[in-house]
Length: 254
Image (cartoon, rainbow, N blue to C red):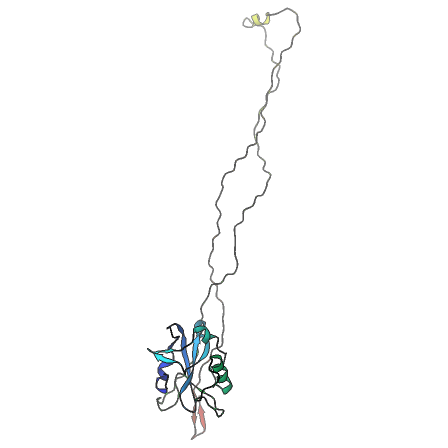
């Protein structure tokens, strides 16, 4: 059971469902201005805790320093969006109770048009000291990796004209004359004295012959290289200011 005595210990505590699964952290506790009993809590969820959702405390309980609620994380995250920096109106409470299946605000909710008031990290009252805590939001920036495109290797065939110089040889006819000597006189006198005859010589030449062979020439693969750039990001952050009002001198000091 959540009471006025354990409000301070729950600020910043983990919020879990009935099975112990973490939903987020307690941001603020809202109390009924008439009874002083806590009836709402905001749950900080989302990346870097940038989103707050309201959850009712009538069925919640404090277990081992955690706030345990009978709702799943998706149910809490999908609750109606209401600004957690202001007081809750009756209409906003009714909208939240309807969402969580209560059918309307309970008897402890203000019935005279007053609004439920938020109790944050400290509040003025008999259980607090004479100091006030000033809080502010701090910006935490991270990165996420997303797909920006894809690269692929594709192989296709192209035809090129290649010219190569090849040396080739051929035979040509050349008439050779030699005088009659003692060494060839026998061949010269062999046969009739006067006759007609033909002698044939076969001529040859070399011609280029083309043969093709497929051979591997290189391996190609896709590699990636990481480049680091600096980008400027900005977001609105809230902070509390504390001012001193002196009723005796009507002097205000910030």
